[in-house]
Image (tube, rainbow, N blue to C red; front, side, top):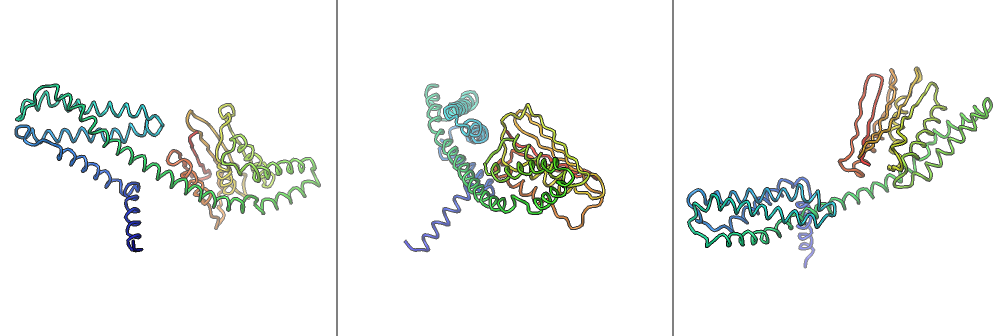
Length: 357
């Protein structure tokens, strides 16, 4: 086999893979399925079986019922049962749905179409056997559609995992580079030196907080998930150090401790929000503040970060990159099950994140 033939086969396989999985081919896939089912009915139909228009109403009714069953399978049965590893329940419901569709067609023929039949069948038993034959005839086609749907999910999950792994490697390199902010440490060490001469007790407190802060940065954040309580404590240390470093800065953390339990989240989600808030709340002329509120519902956790905005904004200050990176990370981890919203007022800026538990 020549190199040109190999390349042709590879391109054909890539096109087939894109056709089966790419969202841009979604309408084409549905059109193909609808056409295939239509041909299935037309080829298997016994023509001139009914008088006049009823011969056409026969295949139209069959097509509508089978397509309704097709989308019932793909939109409801597969996501609700097959994806949740309830294979037996899924097969039972699918068989029941196919049998119900065949019975609907059977009763329509008995009540309406048989009165206009040209070629008569011997008795009702033949028709009931025909219903059973229809079940065995249609089941493989619907299972094939289910297999295609499962293949799509497998491809999408594989691509997402690969993308997450690549993103994790890049994020790890960036995190290693930015874990310890040099200017932050430099300022804190200078503050400790100044404070130590006047208030040794406060200097000791700052060193204690700084050690906790660095310990979390170096060790805890290497895990895929951390306890939310640990992340909150880390944020508290960060804001406490920020309060020492800045004049007229206040912060408030409001958490429903009893409802959090042993909840875990990816590390540094809170840090991204709070770091963005502290950066853009910096005001040399007036007091500034950052407020963090965390609540939990039955199926999600809501994180709201609110900060003051200086009346005179710093010229040339750029922002938003941290939130954009955070949004991309959320997309990789949670797909479309999260919400990230921001609201900007004259003197306040709020970011609200909701993720599933």
